[in-house]
Image 1 (cartoon, helix red, strand yellow):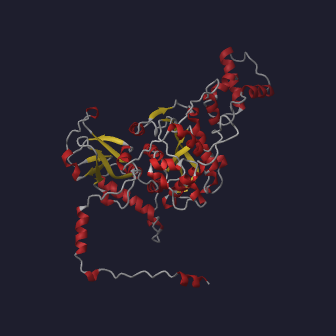
Image 2: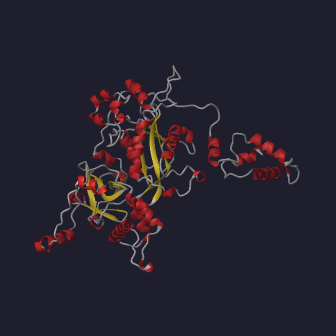
Image 3: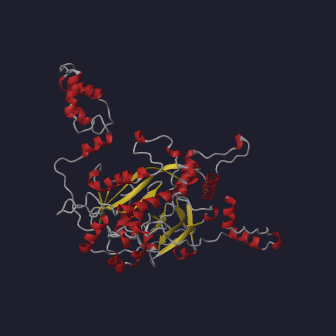
Length: 516
């Protein structure tokens, strides 16, 4: 029976009846069929209760696997005595339904980072689908102050908190209008084996910021237990108070949750950012005074105590720094420009580099390209000769009215495998347009066009994913065809222009009389 219990540690949960049957099979394999007689069912149940105590053999499979993978002996812990000395990062689905664009309800992923020394939740990002660029954006938000938002209480400002505001303001002027969330520069980041964190892009971002990258072993959640517990706290202290809370499994989910007044993704991100500032002032059980264990510190108080000895180094990220954190690929610069996933990018600034070798022998003389998976309108080429970045715009950008990401492009390319670049651009623009307008009702059920559930979900996730780079938009190259049409429109006689009808002036006193 001990062998049967050990075999069930990594398998799906089964009942005690199966374990009794498996015990009999093991006895027949070791001693011969029918050579050992099993005791009564009551005796087997008593034996199973003693041997499986604390192992969840017939309970939760996730808990059972976690207990089976836990190391034996006393637990050890790496101590952190300075802010940023040891930080942990993880991502998990948030147990809340949000209203994406076009009214599509869906769950989103939460990616967060915690500082072990102060238990500060330095940043958290909500995305429809987590990508490697989101981990890089989380790094950027960790090393930059959180600005106060309109509508936030002044009690959430850094000037009203336990943080050493005056001393930090002398070092970094950005702290004047910052919220009460400390800025922490990571030295070591511990992550799991998720493809988002072990990707080349995130490793490159850590290398760019001088951060030690430390992945844990497979199935070793206890090696980053602080962020695991922190994400659980987000669920119990934040998510369950929101409309649209689903619970962490199907057994805890209510009926018709999607019909509740759900928050949008941007609104939920605003609420989460405000909750993080409140979390920073909440006493934490893991931050007790070693001399007076009854005294608990808040993350901000612990940061203020440790910054006296560790110091603070501000890191201001520029637009070029954000580009450095984006995913990278290597391409050749051809006569027509640069092609990425059947999209062609070009600009006049690329003329000196066309059909030239970059000089990077390790990359076969290709050129380094950085791109934003949430915005395919432009890419950035590193100028290996003169330094800096060259911005290239998509040549079919004039065909789409709104920027979109690779999710919609890849979805359309799978449905139209043999389409050209122009046809794909028109198909994506049509998908987003039809998703925005909704189903057409022409009075004939046969002519009614409806988007599939997959199309509506892709369109909603695309519109809910803003670009990752907070860079001022640059003017894309004008389309010659559009310019010609604009020129013809300017030559139109003035009498053909429609009459402008001014809007009436809003009178609050008149509106107040109407109510009575």
